[in-house]
Length: 573
Image (tube, rainbow, N blue to C red; front, side, top):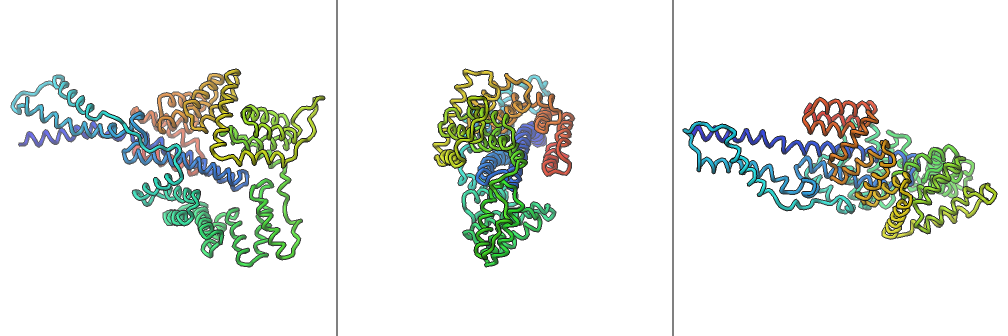
């Protein structure tokens, strides 16, 4: 009897030693990769909010950016949840199907069973011990049997691409049923419900966010939560600023005096309460503080004028002219617009804005360069091409017969009508138009294979369309033309990880090593190389990479603090 007790105990210890690294290593790596992606997407969301608050990003474009980044954030969060729970978002192609997840447990069950069966057939407690080398066949036979039983179709998991807002909300609610104190999950649910127009549900979610905010949360976070809840309450009341919403907006203003959203709604509240002069003064102050090209400025001016008309006041000399942006504003805008077209070459409005901003800043050569790039992108699209031609004539960018700039051509209203024609297309028509333009760009590059910028734009365009393999091929061609381009290496590595459900691959890690060599303090390169070193059991190298990544981030920044917590968890500190 003692023999069997000892045998069972030793078997359990052996299985624990074998299975623990198998079960934890891949999950730890996947969790860290997902955590990093989440931090990147959070930073992108914060940047969108800052640009929107400064008026550098129109509301509809800010909402589109929030939706796309939010979709990627949901996907990364789903991968993080899968890593935590031991499930996988993909099928067996990525090694995450049901049989792969069950394999370690099957081995755990079959190894003792096989050993017990063999012992009943061959065992003898009184027999002398056999050398370990002579027992390998039995172990291998049991492992083969376990692997055979663990085989089969991996089965697909939830698809992230194309997920609707309804599906996203449902998935978030399921997740929050399991983790009711997940503040990030509640915040994502609240934003998703706002995008769906389910304002009552958004109110409930924002309420939960405020409840879960820690007592030591910074004032900005509390102000943002108060303002978001107040806006949801107002929209749920069909635009009426309720007393509670007003109180929350006042709390938001107290924490951030530059909160445009809160100031706007407080003016609306004054107007609704009959305090017309107070509303007018708020709107005048808001208009005076707004950037000249802020997208909300015309609406604010219109409301101020409406209030003044009710009071029979003339406030023309107290209001700015939104149609006359300063040159400095145009220069500042051109940087943001250039970043937008770099991220999405099919962003037609960004191209129009970039060309105009550069021309109005007196940078005609840069404006003509942007015009030429835009024409190449939209060569197969008649309506955008016509709008670009009109814009070039309007800005005097087309050379005349004598080499001078041509006279100003069509009016701004003509150009705007072309832009509106593009906007009026259905999503299916816009996607078909974009796909046609991308295919046209690909055909042009067959005739001009050394056009680096063209290949770069083609790769980014394919990525926007979700055509990952084609994007990788196009960016690979761009990399051949610019072997030392670090940004191309980073973008290609990201696409490779996207293709592998967020997991680092041998190819992406090779690119990260090249990035590290050229840019030693790259946060992204150091992070993923640290994960790889940790996977290989080289803790010292992993710590060095992690330290470099953290030191590259600003001291005291939220992102640095979050990554530091992830590092401590990964290293078991």
